[in-house]
Image (cartoon, rainbow, N blue to C red; front, side):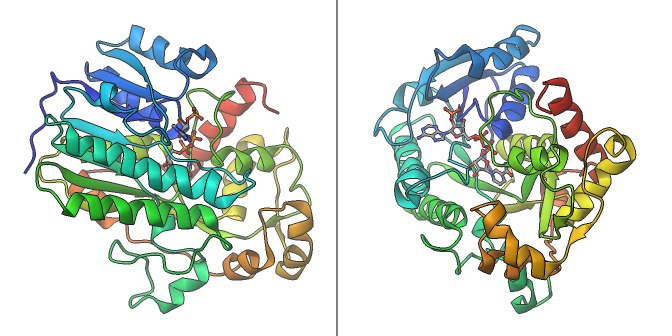
Length: 352
Ligand SMILES: NC(=O)c1ccc[n+]([C@@H]2O[C@H](COP(=O)([O-])OP(=O)(O)OC[C@H]3O[C@@H](n4cnc5c(N)ncnc54)[C@H](OP(=O)(O)O)[C@@H]3O)[C@@H](O)[C@H]2O)c1
């Protein structure tokens, strides 16, 4: 049981990120002081939305320059914090070298932040943003699960540097976090494992999150003739922030938490946009046949390799979210609300 003093500052790594933005908002609105550890505190286009939220809230935000790959760079931001949120990690399909661009920042960054927690006497709890990607790689793996559902007991054993390296980076980073945690007893580790996150970005123009690539493709006409029916879990970014908040402050919180609102697929996401946006935007209405996607997908988008498509199209996807509901008290928003709010934010920002 860990009690966090709300008068102490709370550190958030990667505070400029899509997911972290909503968490920082919640912390500020609760009147807390946030130590935002970011790569470039001077880049106003990355921080202005957080400053605006802070100004309208009872909380305070202070920026600290830190990089996942710079050992010791989180010391100043972590000083006096009892609670550390480690959200920073690259989530992109736009990389050249998977080791350098994904795995190193994820794994060495986790070492850097958590070893700093070992050296910072005030730290009592670390909440890590992991992913469902550290549980599975492909939807086809569902058939090998004992009860036909992904659970917190499972670990990804199929991703590698050559196949789905982002999933590999998240798996290796979460494993490293548990190893470091188990070697000491002062701070506990609570992990949030979100599925694909969707929902309105607080800063639609500056996010690098891969979540937006899909959303943009659903509205810009590139999938007009049909969307690959790739099976995934989906969760609203505001529900992910709530899960993080509760994971930080509930004394009894422990272990991993699948944070997923809907067992879904790309076609269902498009269909959720149809009633409100289908008239004015080229939102896909139908699935692209599997054989065509497997044939043409890699030519349309280099991140869609044939093995991934074969293993994820038309396979069911199911994850058990009961622990996040029961132990963190998260209640998940309807899919349509998430999709409409996301799309509205991009329309308002002039993305389409
Ligand atoms: N979005 C999803 O669907 C999803 C699902 C499951 C888990 N997650 C996890 O959620 C977390 C946040 O992802 P997101 O979707 O919010 O993506 P995002 O908007 O791109 O945020 C990633 C954050 O990581 C920071 N970062 C990247 N490399 C860094 C480095 N070398 N040093 C310091 N900071 C670095 C980025 O900083 P800059 O602003 O300086 O680039 C940014 O703040 C990640 O751990 C991701 O794996 C996301």
